[in-house]
Length: 248
Image (cartoon, rainbow, N blue to C red; front, side, top):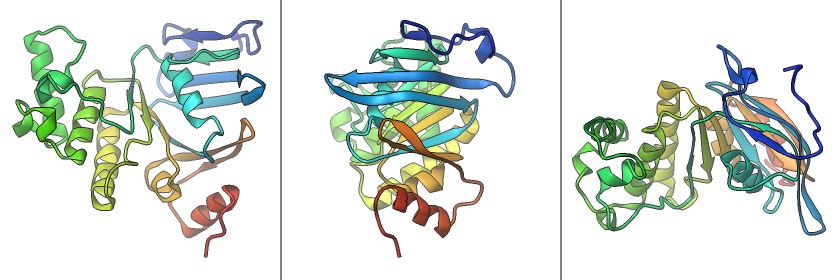
């Protein structure tokens, strides 16, 4: 890591070809001195972040604090104004909306953008089996429930065997029971595939339930970075206080 320039004059974004991201137990994400402004508002101010391979990190914060902006920068959809951003070569994202193509069947949505090879079709079937939707491989997206559509989106993200999985409030539009089922499924599959994970959420209980670490973004910086070895009421109360909520 000592070879990295932490505060270059221009922002740098690199893939896992960087030597800093290779080897067991190394970082999947390395961010130093990240800044982002929109007009006169500084959304991210000298943000530093490391996520290990296989680590699940949840990001909390009030609306407008820059959570999704940070996620978009990691995904390569937004450019930083300054700082170093090193991410793995294979990165996928699951959004709040499933974003399925209505004119493609479920299996084709899973392999969207990939060559139509037998290997990819087999990978799609395996991914659908993992999310419990193999029997829906030839269904149309319009026939799926909200939870089923989001499981297809998860299969599409995991079929590429990402080293970094970005989750942008993927359960927010689901009913309470489906949300709990999806949380359990994501936790199980991330344990199997072992990507680094960054989950953006407004739900403190969800963050504690799923993550190894919980971050709170405030005033452009991380106000909290806490390890969750065993979820507890104390964690919940402390995080809610950080978010300005008095918890019983």
